[in-house]
Amino acid sequence: MRVFGLIGAHLGHSFSPRYFAQKFERLGLLTECTYQIWETLDPVGLLHELKKNPEVVGANITIPYKETYLPLLDSIDSHSKAIGSVNTILFHRNGTQPIATGFNSDWWGFMRSFEDWQTYTKRGREVPNTLILGNGGASKAIRYALEQLQIPAVQFARRPSAGEKLFESFGEYLVDGSLIINCTPLGTYPNVSDAPPIHYELLNSSHLLFDLVYNPEKTEFLVRGLQRGAEGINGLQMLQYQADKSWEIWNSSSN
Image (cartoon, rainbow, N blue to C red; front, side):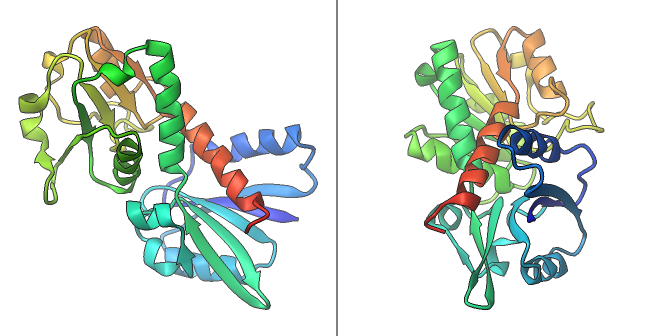
């Protein structure tokens, strides 16, 4: 049996087990592959246990461990190094020595989803500025993807690092046509009434909202924006793209 799974702290409503079960069924792999939930408060101990299990092939990583695992792995790919976080692990062996290699497929998933959305809206390349909400591991992948697309961005956070802005200054950077990307977990089920603390009253029909959260389908961030006439999309398609990229990594002949 080839074993895959999702590592995180609170995984009761995760998309990944259902998505991969459906993928295994389509590929005729239900008797060969399984996807499990690895909910833990001890990421170091879990990694040690997974490396010892020869059936474990790959893992996805979600909040809050995308940055935690970066220094714990035996190696990381160039994208993960540039981003500063990982969301995919490939478990393999060098002789009898277990090896855990980290990758980041979040940036790829966002880039593919964003390009699809650009085609759909026919407006993506025309945005005058891009505003990123949050500065966690997910935001780093989004920032990296935007750099690959040569799209500059301003980043906002409750506790900003160098070069980032406080949420309170959001209105100073918002102009007609702005693309606003929520990279915070605010609004994720079950805390569906939460939303990033921005000036929603300033939004209008010229604004584009991209929320990485996918559960619920319409977060409070999207609802408030849509009420003001903005266009919006959630993170489900991005998640599907990053999951498919993880599957490609786990099955790559070069690995």
